[in-house]
Length: 574
Image 1 (cartoon, rainbow, N blue to C red):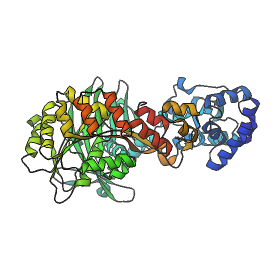
Image 2: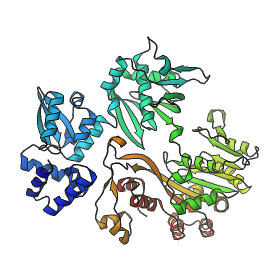
Image 3: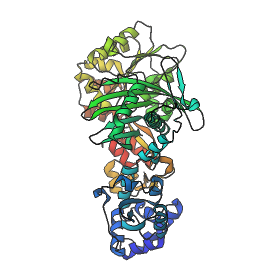
Image 4: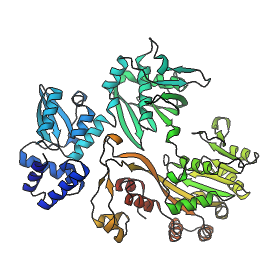
């Protein structure tokens, strides 16, 4: 296969002999196909390769983005086989299966698929990127939860290996007793969905009804993946089961509701794992959409050194949290890891001689030795009320989930100016713009300058899978455009995501944070008092050594932690 593909690309004048030789060396070194090696080195794009093969071999070239592939055709080939060979079934007419391939000269693959399906194979050529995209859309991150497999499992009465822990501590151990004889199949389906999501490290499970289908998606490493696409007959039973588990009112379908599930899962190693879920229902035009946020303590990192701080930024952050008083703000959009950073900070300070109190909406993880309060707006227990109560509880350190209004900000500033260390969050784009956000909330500049001691902006990016990442060849001009210096542009060798079994064929595994830590120095304080513009505050902070969000991303590109695409998605050029 390798020599044939190389020769064809050379005849099509897409590849030189020297380039083919370097691609073959890359292939041997990284144990990948020749086609993947050529594309990874940037010698030929996947589209150019596909069209060149089509011209030379006479096989039709197709763009999979323009094809609607029926589910019954997708089901003819298992996900792991499609990913292994980089193929996609497209259409079946009687005993003939149209198969999209990167290299139709690979007769071993054609023979294997013919044997597996019992059908005659008609190859067509598609770009590798197009096939990878089709696999992602039709198979998702896991073949274990395709509808056919789940329904088969339910019909066989498989043990779901999960128990629901009630608030009154009564327990039902499904893994030990097995499901009751009259247990509805949908109970097993819901349990299977939750267990699989937990094992895959998902942070959220989305149950989404549409006009003709009922979709289930997982959010893994910040990205949503479709796992099931069921018929509408599953909608009401599944949603009702989730609402029952969450202690919601199943009769109420017109108003949003919130609930909670406590679940104990039996892992593959026969160990028990406790997981909390926050559940939210929202009425849509086709039924209720339910989202379950999985609060898995094993996924929580409370070690500051493991969050993604650069060494210089970490030293500044540690120096600030060691201060006896002042306000420390962590900023960023929803889902950027702010809570994790705050938990890490207060856990670092957690000691017998400290009285640490938190007000959260809601409390996500229990930390021994810290007094945590759940905000309940319906009884007027808001952040400002909780903060005032904290001040009568002899606190040393206080954590406020979010500064949503001027009342909360006012109490926090007074607490900071009277000898308390206060942690909180705001939704702003970067560190410098946080100053103007506070001013827009009618906070006087002198109060900001006197109380705020540090602002840390952050974003989450996906970590590259160490087992399958490949070098990414780009021009020095491109590197300079995204922020690298001319000297760095000549030496940097970034990596790109490829995908393997270890990372569910996404190319990524886990996440890390980009940090921009701005210490409120005397020079910054003077700019705040002068109501300076955001760009001037940021410029001064950079002059004093602040690592910006984009620079933090560039450092992680250089170290092979993440990809250029992830950094460009989450940051803007300085």
